[in-house]
Image (cartoon, rainbow, N blue to C red; front, side):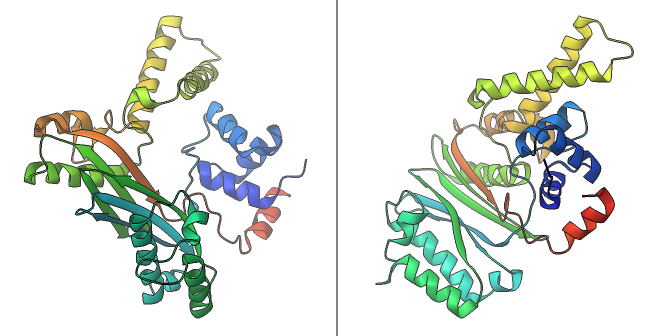
Length: 305
């Protein structure tokens, strides 16, 4: 089948592999992006194969906690340019959407659009249409998440072109100064490291088995000329699975402010019986492909597409 330049670009940005390697992987897997990522990993070529990717799109991620009502929200709203994302009209709309989510029980974006905006008599859909008209860019409410209860905290990082928001819910004996400082550190850690799960036991069994299979194939291919004994292979596999768990799970990750300890041990050192109940982390534009510009021509000339 014909492999498009855009597919090659997407796979390249998802894995950091070379264009020819990406083209070959897509050809071998019939153009299936997920299977191509797996193919590259098994060949030891993929340097970073996180499905969310690092493809940029403009807009804002915003998080807010209403402590009085014990409600927290995180939203991502996209637009076409960074210039528009910094405009007062766009920022006001993002904050309006967040407060509307806090104030209403809405299940998804479509339900949100049919809800009156916070403090307004118009539906979010109508306000969105007005902002598209005045800002003169396409604007999309991409996603939101809402947490409720005690122990809610939020943080938004805006720097170096990245906008990342994290919404966190913890439980503790109290929510005094020590616990709040710990929550802030946990927010910073989650924002920096992007864990997928809280604990190892939260990872689906099929994902763990798939990773074991991938690593075994990789270990075997690395030692085809001189195969290692099975006990050595088992040790190597154990080490790689440990790293896999560290990368995916918050509690087993090395703590960003002191990598000699883990996040779980850091929390234990604070005391107060602190537990992470839930978190949501949004990164602006993750998984959204921007306009390819002249990339197709560039790839075609280099890769013979």
